[in-house]
Amino acid sequence: MSKKVLIISASPRRSGNSDLLCDQFMLGAKESGNQAEKIFIRDKKINFCLACDTCKGNGGICVQKDDMKEILDKMIAADVIVMATPVYFYAMSGRMKTLIDRTYPKYTEIKDKEMYFIITAADGREQYMQRTIECFRGFTSCLDGVKEKGIIYGLGAWKAGDVQGSQAMEQAYEMGKNV
Image (tube, rainbow, N blue to C red; front, side, top):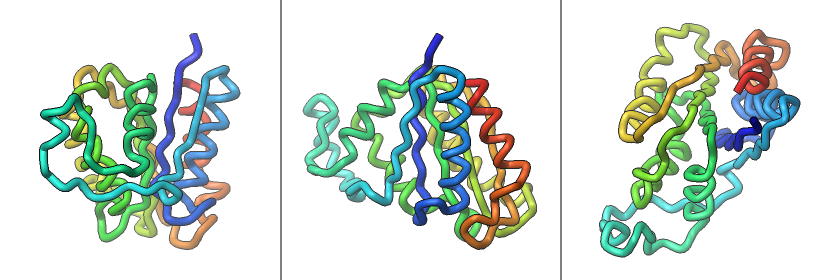
């Protein structure tokens, strides 16, 4: 059965390391007959949450007119969500955190999803990436019926393209193929 796969890339660089891993995941997912779409959030206008709580009184409609409604609707419709970020100072990128915060109007509708996380970092030690993974898990713990299916670590990748030829590239492809 074909699944809807939504890949959210928080890379600041097109074809940056985390974005390359997203492309591999998407290639595997499509080759297995799934529908896959990647959102490159650098190209989207996503404002910070205002914490005005207006959305909770008007059916989940945010007062801000930016690209987040479209992204949130796609997250709700997806069967599989892949969230990818470079790691900066041992935390997810600001773009990814802003996107997560902006799911607030309808986060309760993001349910029964399979989740994958992709992280890249110059540091090669997986244990130092756990803070970032715990931030993702903090988000997913607020969602009903979410199953964490896999984590791809693209470590030791400093310059754009460093992840090419790595085990992480094969792992991303295989995880995508097996969604």
